[in-house]
Image 1 (cartoon, rainbow, N blue to C red):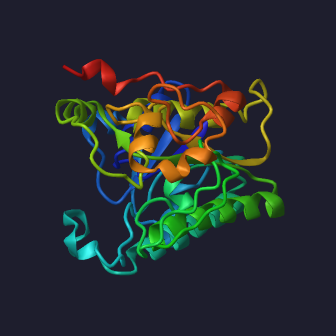
Image 2: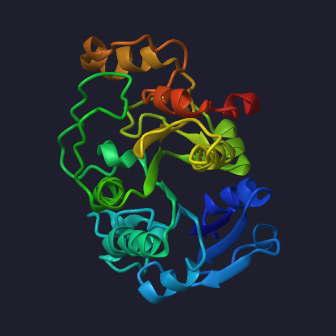
Length: 303
């Protein structure tokens, strides 16, 4: 099957491409040329998500899309000027890339007759991270699942939530199958090693809930969701959203110990056992849908 991979030179793209390469004909799309080990003889089209002509050219003859390209931070956040990766990025880059770019991808996909789109979303669609006010995230229950209400405050989180709704609308209107992965804290091998080397006792609450996922497990989730749309795959709803994260946290301390010490007010909201280092975000839905489970643990690298 001919598959378009947007954001092919990005952090996730460089893992999704080899995950798909043995079974599909890939078209890579990105602003910058992918590394040679990623490119590996695949067709590459240079372009920008905010240029519809570029998208239309890249999607010609494609039957499936892995939409991984995005602006990865809120470019208009009050603290954006403090972040090295945001230096020189226009204030409206997040909205343009993540909303307009996703709209262009979906419009082109529908015009081309694409059968399925799997999009890299974010657990930020909940609103747990990049918060601007002093108001804490209003948890209803723990562990959090995909049905938990959202409470976004920043533009990055908004664009990820809006992307989910846009894909759902395209499914309802046009019948195209769409799936979104709510990824969080993607870790390549070198980042996992640094995480293990620098691991220290937790001293304060972290809005990101110590959520992480290996790049390899993320890529497998994207492959498995796309494969589920093939005739021999499991039956999935035409549109759905899935948390994709490791089933353990990036903290040394057990999860319940973190709550007891740092957020005892959340203890009454725990409705399932948070045994050991269990994640505060549940991946039960993805496990039930396609049989995915995380296979990579950073704890193997601890001294």
